Length: 375
Image (cartoon, rainbow, N blue to C red; front, top):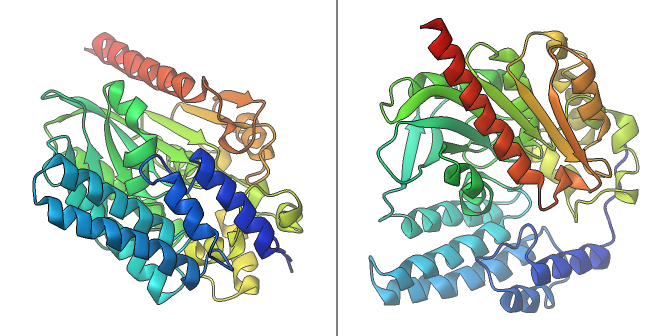
C-alpha cells in the first residue's frame, strides 16, 4: 500500500508564510500579505480548523466593512472580494471538516456579493444527469458571439479562483470562459470518478442554447484539472475543438511509485493526501490508492482513442504531478502540441500562459478556415 508522509508542521507553515509574503497560492493579490502572515504566525498547524478559524476571522472583518460601505459601491465590492479571498484561504486546501465546509460556503456567497453588479459575470446553473452544476461565466466586453473556453479548476483552485486570477488572459483574447469546479471539488455534483464524463455533455448542450457563443468549444484544465481536459479531449473529441492540459496527470501520477515518499519531493505545502482523498470521496488511504487505477488514461485505453487538437504544458521539474505524464500523452493517439519549461509545477514562466493563449487563438482561426472551406 502506498505510504505518503506529510511534511512537519513547522516546515509547512514556513512554506505557507513565504507564499503569503509573495502572493502565491492560496494567497492571491486580493488578500493582504501583512494580514495573512500575522494570522499564520499565531497558528500551530495548517489545513486545520485552527487555520480555518483564523482566516474566517479576517473574512468577517471585511464583511463588516462591506456592509458599512453599502450596496453597489466600489468600496463594498472590494471589501466583499477580500472577504471572499480570506474565506477561500480558510477552506484551503480541502473541505474535510464542517468548519471548512462553512468557510467554502461563505467564500462562494461573498464572491457572488462582490460580482452582483458586474455585467461581464454571470452565475450559471447547468442541468446534468448527476445534479446541478454551478458555474461562473466571464465574458469579454461587447455583444459577442464569443468562442467558449470551459475552464476546469485544480485540487485547491476552484471556479472562483479561476475567475479571480487565472482566466483573465483568455478573456482578453476574446473567449467567454465558463469556470467549473473540477469533479470532487467545490460545488461539483460528482467525485473524481469516470462517471464525471457526463458533465461535459451537459455543458456542451447548454452552450448550444446560448446565442452569445459561437460554435467553437474548447476546454482548459489547470493542475489536477488538466486531467479532465486531457480526458474530455479524448472522450468528447467530436464536440471539443481544442483541449489544454496545463500541468495535469494522466497515468504515472496515479502510481504508487510516484506517490510513495511523496513528501521528499512534493511542491504541495500540506495535506496533499487528505485533499486527494476528499476529491475522490475515499474513506481511508487504502480506498484512495485502490481507486486510482480507474483514472489512468493508459490502463483504460482512453489515451489511444481519437482526440481533439491538444496542447500539453508543464514544467520538467514538476514534483507534484509527474512530468512523465506529458511525454506519455505525446507518445499516444493523435499527434499533440507540447511545450515543456525549465520550471516546476505547471511550468510557469513569463511566456507560459501567452504561449497557451496564442495556440488557442490559432485553433479558432483554423476552425473558422475549415468552416469557410466546407461551406
